[in-house]
Image (cartoon, helix red, strand yellow):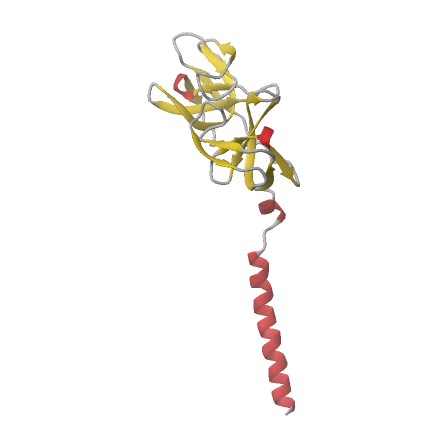
Length: 190
């Protein structure tokens, strides 16, 4: 009887020692938990293929929907809000129509700046979003060095769909990658 009791306790201890670490593996670490964020749609919102209202509509969310957000970028202003949220599915919505649940999303990119050089034959238009229909906010002369945060695929310019987000003063600053030569490694996707 004592042996059977000790065997049962040993089996329970062994099972517990196995199950607890497996349960710990299934939970997220604080770093992993910070990689996605939640938001609640405040009014119906269109989902876009890039962070601009000129990008094709690829879906929508109704008021009250809970969405998973990866990160944010500056882009064209929508009703006073220049932030755009990248969703877990890689699509985009204007932050104007989303209330954060918990922490606000981090900015897209990997925290590093990348360098590019303007390679167009004339100055390069710097726009408020990744589309030629977005407002031109400034220009960069041929040969100028640009500080780049990340890239998205949007409107094709001479066969190149990539657009670079520049480090800026809190507003959207985007250039077509068609006219930029990377100096060093290419920036990551936003």
